[in-house]
Image (tube, rainbow, N blue to C red; front, side, top):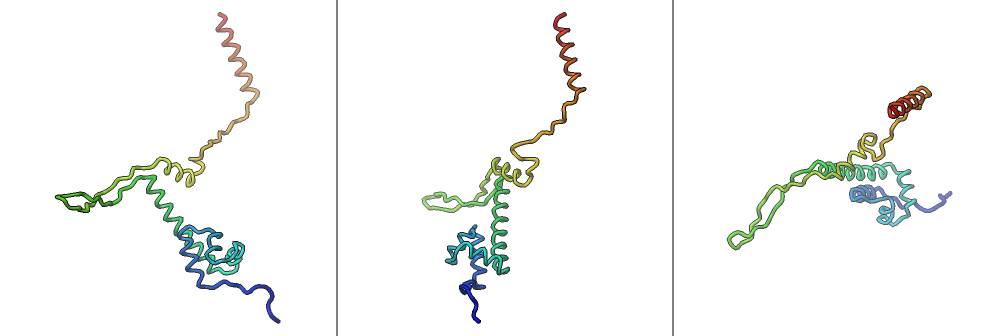
Length: 152
C-alpha cells in the first residue's frame, strides 16, 4: 500500500544552507523563501529532522555570539587598526593608525539591562512594609507635639 500525502521535499543538503543563512540572521520565514516552502514546512522539518534543527541552531548561536561580542566592545570602547590615505610629495600613500571608539553609554545600558535584569531594569520596585497602628499613633503624636510647639 502506498503512503498518503505529499512526498517530503527535505534533503540533507539543506543543513549547510540553513546554517549559513542563519549566520546571516535568517528567520524561519526567510528560510521558507530560500527553500521555496511554507513557514509551517520549516517548522515540520525542525521537528522531524534533528540535523536540520541543529544546523539552524548552530548558525543562530554563532551569529548571536558575534553580535553580543560586538555590542560588548561598543559598550566598553575599543581601538581598531585603520588606514588613511595621505598625499605625500604628490603621491597617495596608505598610513596605518589606531582609531579609538569611545564607550557607548546606550550600548552599555542595553547590555546590562539584558544581562542583569534585576539590577538594571528601568522600573525599580520598592517593598513597602505595612503601616501598623503603632506607627500611625507615633505619627499622630508627633503631629500633635509639632502643633503644640508651634503655638507656644
